[in-house]
Structures are given as structure tokens and as C-alpha cells.
Image (tube, rainbow over the protein chains, first blue to last red):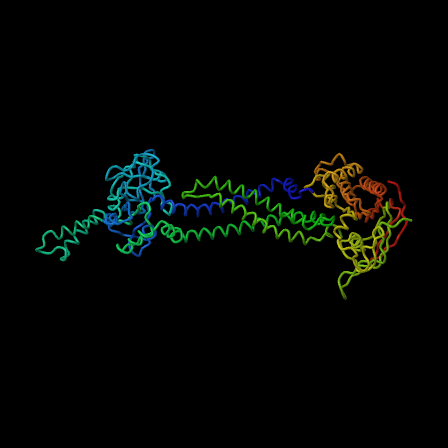
Length: 403
Length: 235
């Protein structure tokens, strides 16, 4: 038996292919939206993996350090090391901010939104690997930057009052929002995060000096001690903990919660906080886009197939008159719809693969999503063709005979 | 005399009901024998198309009797369940416009009908080629429909009508869009095919050029037919 759908497609292949390409671009956008969501989830997971920790110890009753502000004393890490089941503990601070670097070629500052991470070299929180350069060796003013920042090795990066030299480069070190990370020594980061600028400090000193509670006559050294405490910070956002091999992570976390009056999250809990809470609204937003795009795509396929069928109404009447079964006619329309979907999917997949790297944030196109997308497109096309099939089956074969 | 290829007796067709009812056919009688080509002539609104649709098992007559090759197919109701198969295997259609399938080549337009009847591709194509050659369009078998002239397209549609060797062909003004020469060529072909395949052909026409070619003509007026001997001029 002749494949009527195939012959019709070959006969008008130009129109068919161009229609498929148009549909494909729409499918490409849909696949990209799914990729944007996957990228967000992956960024969140990568951030957790890169921390290299089994537990996140944060301020009690907070979801910190990524979802809520958390403030923990930096001596907690030392205390934790004394507890059983804990192999390593490192203080870490996180702060999302603008960083700028002078671009030699243009002579202009390049501003990048980054997540600034303060860490203690050799302890949890340090980047697991570098793709270029060396680790931070000096106590101050050296930085490691993710390549997405665009900062080169040796570049001078301005962060608040100081300038840092990029000595190493990392890869896929991003925040859950997709901002690339810049790692600096913990003390520098504490200064950046918790300390005020010089004018504010001066102002604060005057205010403290004028406060009789801190500037008591006959209590020498009190004012200086208070002012000193205002120019140093001993807070961090979290303490990252690695447990000893074989130790029960849940048990260690429970111990920390019970005895230290802190919150301790396991890797699974932190992932749940990031994926289910932090990016939940964004993912719902993207899901809505996906639903709308799917509906628009289905409507377009339905309209195209319906129009193509109406253009063949006389031929369909003749086919019915000369004995073609409803199955033959339905199959022809269904095959054309599926053919259109196939072309659309291939074009869409290629388009998404081509333009995904051009997006500023990470777009993760998973093969599983592509397979699911393929079946959904086919299902959508089959559904869309039902309108055209219904119209074709209602064609009266008598229409082929004049009068 | 042999059994008529198609015979209808007192066939009626009423559209609508009550005061708005219209009797399109008011008791039509016809009998066409195998190998015969008869004309069906009448003005617009006389009931030609209704009769053709009834004969083609596309609409159900209201009453009367119809036999095809001696088998009763209608007697106050259809006596055959599967009208689609009846049309496919036992009735050929030639239309005013050829209505060929534009996305199939010439040979496949003809071969499609046997294929729909379950004939395998190779014998269906071979039958199509045989018919196309008999109708002098064999050399265009691989051509696209749009590349053919009007006369050639009409010959292909005749080949398509003959593809399942039906005992009867209904031709609805097949020469209307053609000039005299091509119209007569089509008539010659129809007569030739009717003889060769012993197919009865009913040609609905207004065409003054071809009316003299019929040996028998049915005039239809106000839903009734009147038989008349034609000139039977050779073409």
C-alpha cells in the first residue's frame, strides 16, 4: 500500500519542512526552558557538592547559609573539632555582591555579580580543584575565581576597600542563583561582610565615646575595648563539617543540635532546602512557561494540520468515495502530524543545543528530558491531529460528485 | 439478453419532510447492459446529480429497487452492509474535474484503488500501467499530475475508474472542461474501455458535442427519466 502521508510530505516538502522548522524553534524554546530549570537545580547541587561537607552548621532556627541569613561564632569550628565523629570543620562566609576588575584591553572596569566565599585554606569550604593557577597561599588579598567571572589569572579584583589578585581559577563554582564564586581568605571575607567603611567606623567611635555607658570615668580601657570589638568580626555564616569515615552523619548532626544550640543540616536536607524552597518559586514560574509553550505548540500543530487537511478536502472526499477506509485517512493525517512533530523536535533539539551555551546562566539539557520531550511532542501532535481527523471523517464522499 | 449491469426500478428520492419536502427523483427506471455507454441528459435541477449519487451508493434513495449485475443492492433500503466496499470494488467514478490525488504520480493514482482493495503493490502497478497504456497515457506514468494536460488527466481518471474492473462506471460530465477534439477523444476512450472490459458506463452530460455519440440516451426532467434512441455516431 502506498504511504499517502509520506507521498504528500514529499510532494510539498518545502512547505512542510519550513513549517516544521517554525514549530521546531518553538520546541527549542520549550526544551531550553526545561534546561534553565535543570540548570538551576544543578547549580544548587553543584554548590552543595563543591562545599565538600557532610554537615552545614548554622544559626539555630534558620535555613542558612544559602536560604536565610545565618550568623555563627567562628570559634564554633574549634569546639566542633573536639566532638567525636567530626574529622574537619571549616568556617565559611557567603556574600553576594558586585566585584570589578580592570580589563587591560579596554582600560575599563568590568563589573560582575559574584558570590564571595570566605574560607580557611585546607579546611572544608575550599574549592576541591583548580583548572589553572595555584591555591591561596597568602593570608590576605589573594583570590580564586570561577572562570564564569571572566577574571584572568593575575587580574586585580576590587572588592570593597581592597584589591585582590586572582591566583587560581575554578570551574562550575556558582551560587544557586547562578552567580560565579570568588574565594578569598576568611579574615578578608569577614572584613568585607561585617565591617563598615572608614567614615562609618569613625562615626561609630564618636558615638561610642559619647555614650556614658562605654566611656565611664574611672574605668580605663573600657572605651578602647568596646571600640576594638567594633572593628573586628568573629562571625561566619556557617561551619562546614566533614565527619570521620564510618560515622553516622545523622547522629553527629543530632549531637550538634542538642549540645551546641545550633542547627545542623545534612547534605540531603541542604539539597531539599535549596531545591524545594530556594528555587521553588522560580521553578514554578518556569513550569508555567513550559505549560503555556506546550499549549501554544499544540495549538499551532493543530492549526497547521487542520489547515493542511482542509486544503485536501476534495481529495479526501474522492478517497472516501473510491473506498478508502476511515483508518486510511486518519492514519494519513496522524502520520503527517507525527512527521511534523519529528521535524520540529529535531530542529528544536539542535536549536536548544546550539543556543544553550549563549545563555548567561547555566542551561542543562539532559538526554532524559529530550527523550521525554520527544514523546510529549509526539503525544501533542497526535492529540492536535485529532481535530483534523475529525474534520476529515465528517467529509461526505458525495462532495466529490458535483451538483 | 444478458443480465443488466445495473437496473433501477421506480427509484425515488425525497429530501426533507412535510411541507418543505422536495421529490428529486419521482420513479426512475433504467437498465444498462455490460459494454454499453449511455447518456444521461437533463437541465440543472432535473435530478441528475441525485440519480448519480443514488447509483453510486453515496446517498440512499427513498424507495425503489436497484440491482447490480443481477444482485439486489437496494430494495426499499440498502441490502448491502458495506457500501464503501461496494463503491470500491463495483462502481467506478469519473468526475467533471479529474480530482486526481496531486501528491501521487500518475501510475499510483490508478494503482491506489486496487491497493485499497488489498491488491499487492506490484500487480496493482502493473494493472495501472496496462490501463494507462490502453488510454494512451502510459508514457506519462511517472509524471506528476500537475504536469498533465486536462485531456490527459481525464484519461488518467478513466483509468482510475477502471482500475478495479467495476461492472459500472458513473461519469459526471467528464468532457465539460475539454475542447471538442479532446471531448470526443475521451468519449472514444470510454466506448473502447466499455467494450474491452465489458463495463457499463453512464455519462451525465450537457455537452452537445458528445450527445450524438450515444446509442441510448436517458433524458431526466423533474425527477423522471425518458429513454430515447441516440444517433450512436462513431468517434
